[in-house]
Image (tube, rainbow, N blue to C red; front, side, top):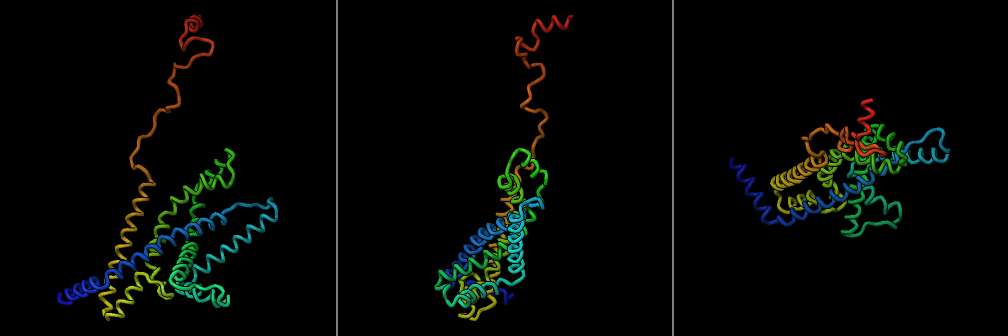
Length: 280
């Protein structure tokens, strides 16, 4: 019990002295995670759409060759960035680009570090989202595509107005999952000097030698961010699902009630001439 009390006291002292630094780190983490997730989703949707463009043996050879090349490039991109740690990707981009370009491309200053971090997290997220989007598009009933083509819609129109809205709902949990992962994985960006939440912990722990109290404070901060993100994502999912209770339509409102149709050359549904003819 004494150790627990001491822990809370140490956390309180750290927060009192370095609270602004922790808040700045959390803010940087949130900005990077949100922006990179949005950009990564756009990359993933682009790759997923390119991966699902249909072609057959009857199509021109140029179209088939181009689509095969594009799918090969997307496959290499996905496998490389899914198969390597993000920390090494950060090192490769931040230090590798200047190395291979003879310092023609450099990430200078704080803005350069932000740019490099955004690139790393975005393309890493895009690699994971590419397969999620492809799976989401494939999961849509093929009858949706056939129906769209039947009414004369092009492939682009079908994707934008029919397939992608349904695929987006299917992969929304995966988008949320990637966002929560990015909230935590941005911690590896300290390797290139990015001042995010974990980097703040490293700095404070090095200055005060209170590693565990600072780590406990970090744990609570990350948990708070991920729990709030999970709550918001579930709320969005419920909004997209719509109402859980509804009434089935028993009568088509566009259909006129029987007996109300008028003959174009007669006065009404039960005209005197109709009665005479019926009596005959």
